[in-house]
Length: 297
Length: 308
Image 1 (cartoon, rainbow over the protein chains, first blue to last red):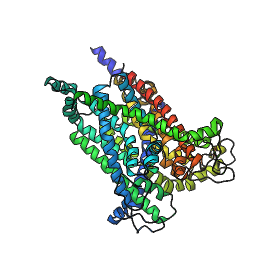
Image 2: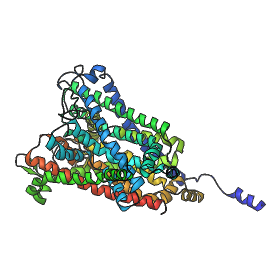
Image 3: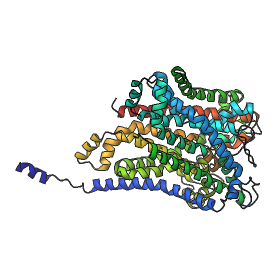
Image 4: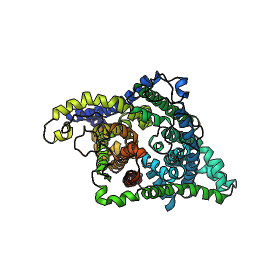
């Protein structure tokens, strides 16, 4: 016993000294530096967008028609783009979210273990990597060529981008629902469809909604899929099913390369509006997760 | 609703993923057959993209895509790995959460906003304060001068391969970071404690335990980042400079595959339009190959991490 304590007293538990310690310190400092390297540009982007965009944003800016680029910043606004973004993103959500949830139900409740289920799950992950511009040209060649430019075409392109994201996030959430819930419902004699719709889905609803909101936030900021599916207009087009439309990202893209300061200022205003929309959606997702998320990793 | 009907409905939604992927390949290929037929293999991989001579070779765009993506990965990987290690090994879990949110914010800033900022603010600043001094320093230096010096008969440009690569690096950092974190999280705590018990410092533990264990998954994460960097469109279209060139000069304006589609497809017709569609086909095939490889590697690493 006494010998043991003597042994412990001799063991050196202090931090290693010399070069080993220095190297360890350097590594930690480098990790912190890499974090800072990411924060600085992010901060610059957000501060610049707020500084340049805040002064132009007003009710008039959010609702007036788009003026010619040569006009100074106090003329007109981006009303048609705000309207287009809201309409097209909503339509894309209506198309993609239910389909994505159904696909995730298939992966988790029906075919997930089988070869086909695993293959679909894998390809859904791969599909998240398809470049957004390719998605735009895809909808151009199967839809726009035959039916013309419309908000609907843009919504289909955005929907194709959202689908795999929704499938993936919903699948993650369904996986977390404990099996005992399903077994309890089966014991009461419910069919599989009924168990899924009335027990499993409600149990995972918080996570599913927050995942869908994040997918919508990503989609709202996409430009490339809309470039060749909705064109641009300068007056609002409330009919999302026919005729060209416009959206905030498209206006930022075209205004960015204009030499006129008025157009550039409207571009910054549109950027601030767009970032505000995505942030609101993201915060909503966090609130939903915090309040209604029952199961989490 | 019948049980059977519901099952078929969900299966149909699942199959939709495969249908869309096949349709993308089929429809874009169908729209570009005239280009593939007209140019042939040698024409496709030639560097002349000229409306007047009706020659549309895609080589300079493929070059630009590869160059910008490689720059982005080289810049982003050490930073992403550093952040991932910081968040998993250094910062206590309680404080790591908000830091993760901050990194994810990078992914929330839309591509076009990166482009707007890159084009109007970042690129002019880079040109006058960074590229100009680096360019004059390396001017005439062998080898390095070809990379960092001003292009022959020109000056360094704010909108360039390098600027596109830097902006891409910002954009792919969140995805590489979050995947690396997932991979690193699969390292067994026992192994870490074992290394510490042997008296290793944190760096020695990371090099001896964390990195060897998560090597495969990290390679997958980097590949996924590469795939993203290749397909990213709008930000690059604004900051790459829109010049059909193949050059070793990183501070020269160039072009890449998504950017040329975004900039030219709207006004293109005939063979040019088919050519842009064909570039989309090449881009699709390229990103699918990279993503399949990356997802395969990540999935295998995850299985091994769970000990199955």
